Length: 361
Image (cartoon, rainbow, N blue to C red; front, side, top):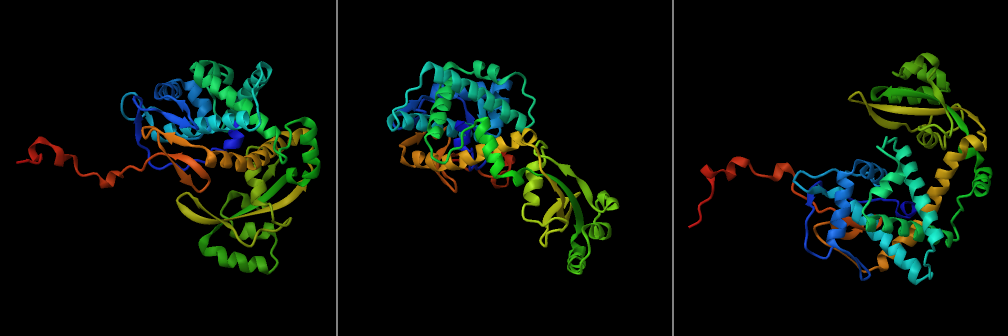
């Protein structure tokens, strides 16, 4: 649930490597410190334990692989984990001080189950075949790392429960949401036309002249589906492609291509892609339940994100430069990986050889 609040929108610059050794203070959030040894141990666990790395990468899709040097991790991974840790500590502090929340043993156990389910769902969504279960991944974490994740999850669940805009993650609430947004979960059949850019103007003229979807696809599309009048397939809410298809035809009338196509690259060339809905049919709640839950989670995350940003804006945060740089991006406060020079800016290695080494006199 804390990952729903975070939304993990991270502005990352460069791909340098951070060494896993430091003697400075680590990360401080409102006086609470994550020591360098603790943070480094967590980074090491992520980068060297495939199961942990798989689930963490599903939650924060950046590289957590070891860096180029010994005992190092890619900068993107270090800063991404720093973001998650800072957000977790800040939210935990907020609900403790402002909402007087101290989780019970039962609430922590429930949070652990919720976190494991969230990690599993994230891996399934990304289609990762993690080498072990989320329960095993959590158990493999260093104790302080594991405890902080469970505590942060409990705090986030409690915070979400106090937001007026939050939709409970219950079957009854999901059914009510589905009933009021039923058309968002229609099974969609679509036709496409993949049109060379040189034919876009002619396509538009034929379209304005009243040509049907099938006629336009047969005449202008280069996709094999042209032989079937552009008919491409039907997609229900359980399909991995459903969200993209739904977004593609969201405002398009039935049996019409949109006036403005998507511009895509295909086999090294640029094409105009037109997508038309040809049939909409109601999907039963049982089949749409996964998509409904995902939409509720997104809605809750959007509501919670504003609160999360306020918490981070008000927090006093300091980050060891070895782990990243705390600053503002377009989505709010965040840890950045510092920019590094491109390889084109690095001089020839031959300039540093003994034969051409500079002489200081």
